[in-house]
Image 1 (cartoon, rainbow, N blue to C red):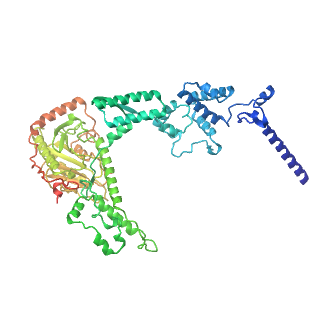
Image 2: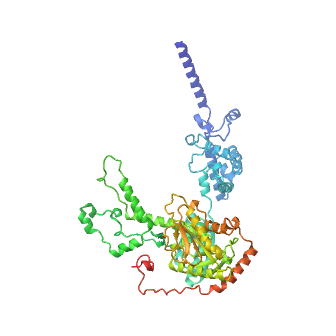
Image 3: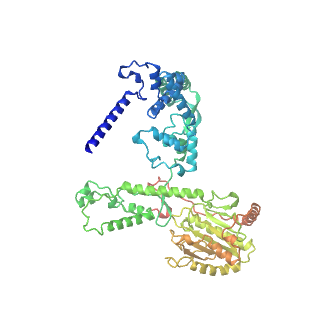
Length: 624
């Protein structure tokens, strides 16, 4: 048995050697001229051998580099006056050129109609074996699959693929998308010629001469002579400049803004970045003296004056104290469960630049959120329809709703500034809103036909970080009977409002008549307040869970007392244009006698003669 196995192995090895020798005698198809092998003459000896050696010209082994050679020849034909076929015949024979034209020219025109699956297979097949994708799918983790693309991206890919040339059809899709041209516009400017224009024209001329473009060189030399002549004579010329859309958009978007932040009271203040001396020792950059004795550190440390410390405290934001507390809590908790104390390990403290960078980043984020909210706000005067505005004051304005009114004379009082609560506006805006309330109460008792009636003022205020909310006072006129009974209804409804786990469950009574929740609720709280007339009677309650609070809460109580339909207080529909026009004209006629006398007698602001102080300007109440 062992002898038979040995014979079979010898026979198999002999057969393999004969087969390999037979293969080596045959010419390979990738060889440029197989007739030079073994001392040949380079030409076939007879017709039989020619017919025997005839093989397909394009194979999987040479198709990729022949395609690249065909693309280079086509580019050369486009740049010169010769035809593509003549350039190809200089390098290959007639049969190879014919095969290349049939294969590559056909794939050039029909490559865009190929299915994505075929194109991926073709690109995968043309790659080297070690670069091929075994799964048949893309290995790019960033590029999405074809069925996960958005419609806009798919539309862009189709438009780009339809305009691809032969040399770009085999590049990755990411390169194709990035190679889309940027839209450019031409701007014409009429001015005098300066030295920069002469230098730019001379640089273009030199570049054209180095490239050997005669036509462009003649044209640029003529333009350069004209520019020099215009500069010598002092003549204005028209210069055409190409501006890309991306650069124009970038230049129009770039602007300088004054960053602000919120202090501990919820008021907006200019951003104040602390100096090196006013920062705590934990965030100072370690100096050479700090590595020595402790006494030398205190001797060399800069001393802050009382004025600087007070200024930093006044301009400090409401979140800085929370950050310091959280940092201290994290530092105390770190290593609490460890077996050994790491007090003697060196730790890198936060640098001053890190603290300033965080403050600046937070201020920029707040500015972007606030700007976006103001652009979408429907309460701001810039976004309110002009025919709905009845009166415009110095800080607040009066308008009527575009939807159906709950009662005749329904209107709004809103500040010009995009702010979330009337407790955070300045004194001028608060006094002006109080003046509007007084005029509206007089209008209700005289012109609306309500015997001893008045207005009910509703206000929903949000927290300082709620940039989407723009506060406005909703003014609803009621008669005398409703004005006397509504306080009981509102007090009961406010007691039932909220959860039993709320920390602020008490209903607070208003203190100052006409000023709403001002001086009754802290500035950095969100609340709901109701004020009955101008007698000073009203209630306010802090709102903690805004997800469960309906914004139509006040209208619901008044509408339920007056037996109004829910369509008027829940989601009122827009009023038809004709009835809205009649309502506007009627309210303007009633308001016209009360328009005079709204100008407040404010003391003139004294401007100091001395120069501007260093740092952000403080309000008058916070000046040192």
